[in-house]
Length: 566
Image (cartoon, rainbow, N blue to C red; front, side, top):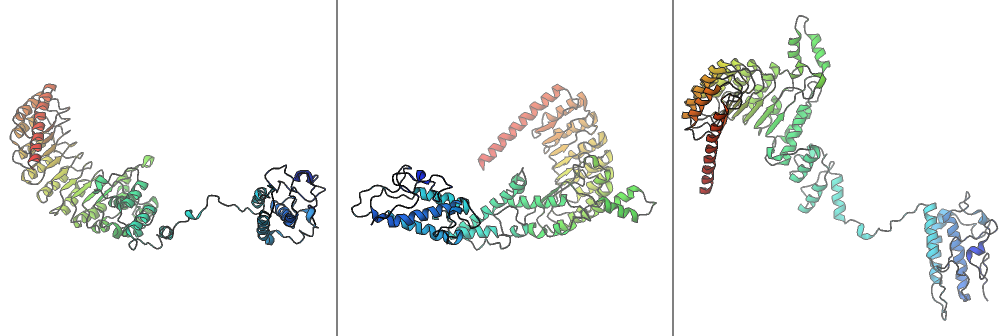
């Protein structure tokens, strides 16, 4: 007994032709369910054995297409045309959807099994049905699958553990217990913004600190930091905190908490800005002062900066300290009070450098340091065990301060002294010259942009007749003239240690230049002699250049010979 085709289909007609008007028929098949040819008759299978399976297959595919595609949806999620159908009356979208799809696949798989003696090639295909289901799933349930997903993309357990360690490193820092190759992976993935309280004592890997430095600063030259990225980061981080520290406003614990983290790495501090207290703090102190006190007294009392005593004394390896008391980029808010290095600041700093026993280089520049402050600093630096370089350039030091520094030269191991751009006159130069004559350690003296004049210049020249250690002397822009040149002619002829002299921007004159040229003829050690804008004449400058070139060439050959012997 043959089973008739499903209702709504006619033999010899395509499914779309059989559908007709949607308003009159309930069965709607957007795509053919049998075969890949849209014009293939759906009921061309001559074998009646397939119809028991074909009928539920058509019903299931139709129900799935309608439900999943959501055509003509009502409150129950099914087509109005099928609302009264006995087949679909029991259907609900959510509970039956999974079972419906599995049942349809099972039926189609049974239909695809060949029947004995079947020679037909019209085998039902799942292509259009799969496409319809996929489109319906996307519209109704948003079930999106990744076609590229595979088990190969799942990371191994070790990789998942490393990811967990990186993501939770701030809460649970784990590094020492890992294998070296795993430590490398964790360090390469750690963010650079982790708190120093976690990373400073735990991480010593230079690659990690290099990432931290390059992430924070555009210019990173580790040659000034002993080739260590970690040292560079810790030093510059501490410097930035000091530059932005506002007395009576910033929490001092920001500095105190950082000391134990960086004390073993900080060897140099360069702080080119110290901020004063805020205006509100100044107004409070102004109310406490009596009306008879002047504004200058008020400014000196209220503009104290950060006290370096606690910090400097807690850094056992600090060797260089470069300071400038002032405000950078103040613009239209400029006031002299912003650049006031108070006496209390000087007292605190003097105590700090005295207690820093490993300090080798101390620079305090552009800070309006006067004679009184210079005397206080020099007194605390007497007999310092390690200090070899002192730079007080671009300040307000005059003769009184120069005498205090002269005393320091006699009672220290200073090798380099820079007093450029101060107010030292002949009396101060004479005091320095006396100390220079007795010194056995000083190798460099810079008095550029002062006013020592001929009396001071001659005193320094006489000291160099006996001094056997000074190698570099800078007396540019000091109002020197022919008498000083005459005395230095003798120095050039007798001194065997000076390798560099600068007399630029003075008034030596033609005669002074000739006298110095005569003394230079027999000199074999001087390699730098600056006479620019000194009025000595072009011929003298040319001849001096020839002598210096010969001395440099001889020094080069001697150095080359020594390197070969070693």
